[in-house]
Image (tube, rainbow, N blue to C red):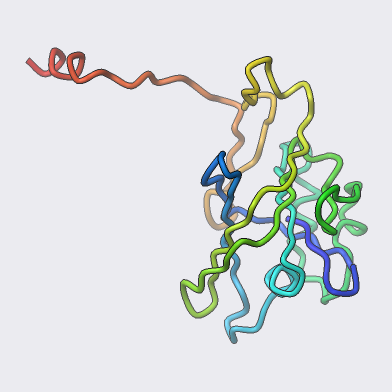
Length: 180
C-alpha cells in the first residue's frame, strides 16, 4: 500500500486485509488498523487527509522489500527508499505505485466504516489499474500463476498463489444425481 501525506511524503506499508468487491463500478476494500490509543498510523492518517491510496500487489520476488516496509519507521520516512522498490507517479492519484509490483490499483476513498476501536474499513473506487501486460490474456483474465502474488495468512505466515485449479459449479440435477 502506498500513500502520501499532505506534504507529499511517500508512505509504504504491507497490507494483507484487502479485497476486490465489485467490477462495475470497480470497488475494493482495505482493513486499516490504527494504534491502540486510537491515533492513526501513517496509512490511515494519509488516506483520511488526502482521500487517496494505491494498493500494490506483492509478487514473491518482492518479499524482502515488502518486509522492510513493515519496519516501524517514524512518520515522514519514505519506506520505499529504505526497501528499494521504484516509485512511479500515479496517473490518477498522488500516491505512487510500485514499478516492481505485478499489479497496482490507484484508488480514491469512497467511504470509511469504523468497525472497532482501532479498526476501519476503507472502501475505495479504483481509478486506474497498472498490470504487467504478460499477465492478462485476450479475454482480459489475469494469470494467477504468473502473478505469483503473496498473501498473509496471519501472524508471520504467508502463502504464494502459484497453485490454482478450476472447480465447476454443479447443476441441481448433477447434485441430486450424486446423492441418490
